[in-house]
Length: 129
Image (cartoon, rainbow, N blue to C red; front, top):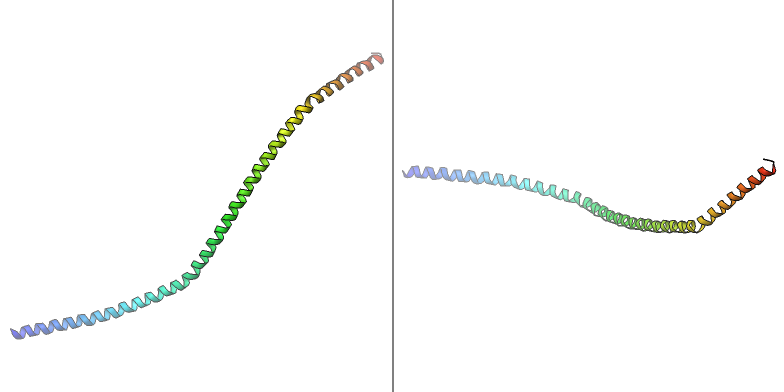
């Protein structure tokens, strides 16, 4: 029985030794994979850094453009408001002129029309008509 126990112990120790060797092989492969991943990550970070810097520059330019557009829109709004005020003033001025001139002009036109009508009647009578 003791011999069987020793054989089982040897087999068990051989299995543990094989398992340890297999674990070392696996750990070496994992180390290689992690090393490769580290290299790839470093490469990506080297390539991504300029892209991120460009994005930062682009973002700052977009902010600047947006600010400029906002300023221009404000200027246009003020210009439109000024034009509205000027046009309203012109319309008011036109109405005041019409109010002051319309009646006298119509009176003069009526008088001229009457004079022409009377002159036509006088000419008609003078011609013998």
